[in-house]
Image (tube, rainbow, N blue to C red; front, side, top):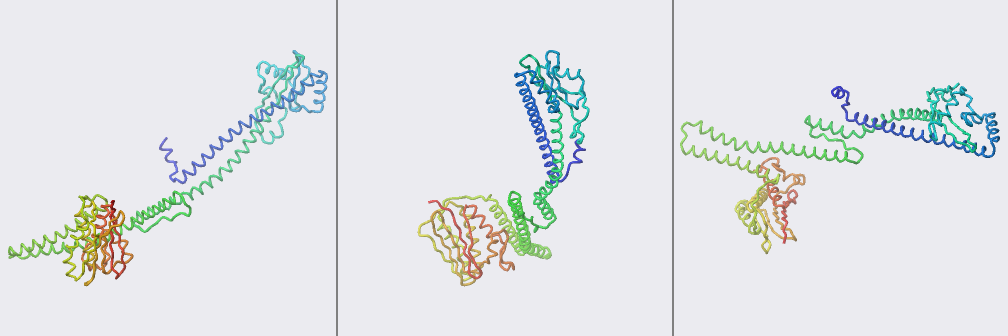
Length: 484
């Protein structure tokens, strides 16, 4: 049973939503029609009772004046056919003083007499008596036209008059049923038409509402096929789907950038590993090819192998350090350090390298010592990378200035050079892993320095930014939060 149901279940979410909305509409409409019919029936019945009570009150007042007046009035109304559709019986004990029977009823005295008897036995103010035993000679024109099968019922009530006689009045319930059934038939026809329109309108609006989801699915399939440049068309309207589309496109943009960077990184790593691996292999093959290799030559070959292996190890270590820095798992051994002393020691390590290129390395420190809680080893590594880059990209005779100064709650370290500078397009990417602005790769390096520097700085809760322009030098600005 379950499997057979699943087989006919719509696969499309759009179709399921349309069917659900249509069924919800129909069930709601049926509920409304049911309640409307119930209250309409009660309203018609109440009006019918009011009509009968008004007649009873009218005839009772006539009876109070005179029995003869009541008989005369009933006779006149019967002659003028004013009591049409109403059954009226006035009797005293078992004697019938007056009885009005609608003209379209088959006049069966026994049946007519039983109506009042049945009502009096019920003991209720009102009785709804089936009229199966009362044969209608002809149906009403409305009923005949609409071919309605109505259950004939008579709503009866009676009143004991002042002289002890009983006056009973009954009216057919068929007109009430007729109006209710006509009402239901018309409403169902309207509901059928509205239902068809609602299916079409629901399908249209569901399709429109689901368009961003469909575009997202198509774009995902395109991306899965290998086209990372595919994007989801953004909807014209605002809302959750528009936000989802925007975030999804941003995610695709980020993924494309990461994949592009990864491919470039792999190319760079492959290029940087190729040279030491080739040298390592050449050294081994050279020793193996010469059967008369001396111990000294073997030692030199092993030293070459160790040197190349160290280069590979440095590359892999830098990659691991950078990865730790990016994910926030870098281990810091923090202690209270004097930043003036730390920066001075870092500059002294690179003074000789700067002198070889005839570059002036100038320092400008704050007069008062500035203390920070930091990892001195990691900070030396970061400052060393920045100084190494400054010397590497500054031409002979240039100037590098390292300064430290304090502002409220901030300690700032600036490394400024008069080198080749960095283009605006490259400034956004120089902190990416393995990215190198020098596309010709004429400058020695593996592209991990600035990425590692940023990771170390951020691990300390600080920030780093670059201010540069081509041929106008560069300034790297590091800001540490410092609570006084």
